[in-house]
Length: 403
Image (cartoon, rainbow, N blue to C red; front, side):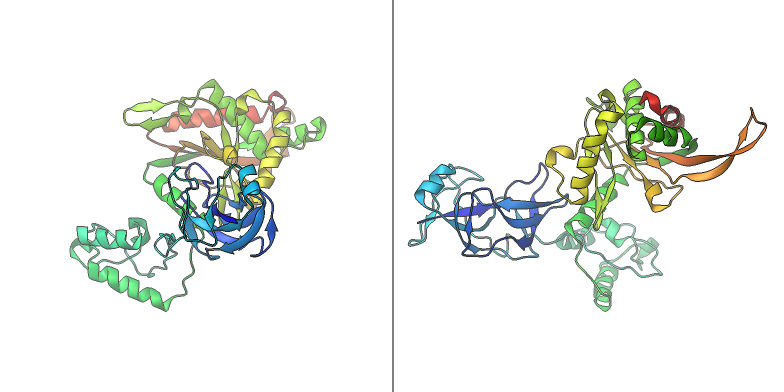
């Protein structure tokens, strides 16, 4: 009876590996075609690997807690020739022989082989505690860079290493002493999600970033929620307002590539969702062309998928800006960092009851107020342009009936 290999699939456009989290079936159990059999975790979401066809799960070749690259053989399903043919598979390798036949991916003539120790992907970024009296790494010699590349470290990982060389330069001896000192600390492996967030923020911080902010009144949004019957989140109001403002002028969301500004083709807006040990950014497409009431259902569905870390690949990536509601943490002001592929991130702070001078009543009256912030790539926008965009977003939010 042929054995069909279970291949680590391509789980996303930029996904090269996945961590084995759990086996959903036991060896020897009968499985159906496309049945979830292995739970894996990428740097973006938790997903499942499915059975290639109906049959009996013969064996797993991988271990929980280790990462494997796309195309690796994770195990084998024993299937009848009929079940294999029904699934579009010509066969696997016969259990009575050592011969193997081609099973895609990655190529029609490729021979799937069990993963070896060198196939397993090791984390390249670890949570490294740093000395409290550190002054920061400066110039690094080629030898230092080679040693860091060997360990999969970046310059940011050594920002807290005190250098004893000329001008505060970190020498290879400083670096080795630092590594040795880590043995005195408790060290835990960084999750794929945390590694992904760290890498994104490190790349974002290579740009000159700035933040502007202003207060706006929430009363109109609160009244609109009561009278319209729309139970839209304040985040969704902000998403729609930002989309309309960018539809009027998309230049602020452009990306600087060389000496050219690349303008967005579609007003696709993401928003930050906190998940375990990281953040996911689901994306609503063509927000400027959809009314607020039409966005509520897809927004809530994507939000639920993100919280479960089961966000579809087509519902993430490709957005031109992000909205983050840091007010949910009780914060009134923050300076969020835009994603590496974006120029803008709009922040919404917590609402507060504050006194406001009423010219008609000639006295102070209580109103609900929150802060809006706009963090941006200063290479693309200056303070004036950022301020005008933020002011326009605030104006739109104060007239929610137009959203």
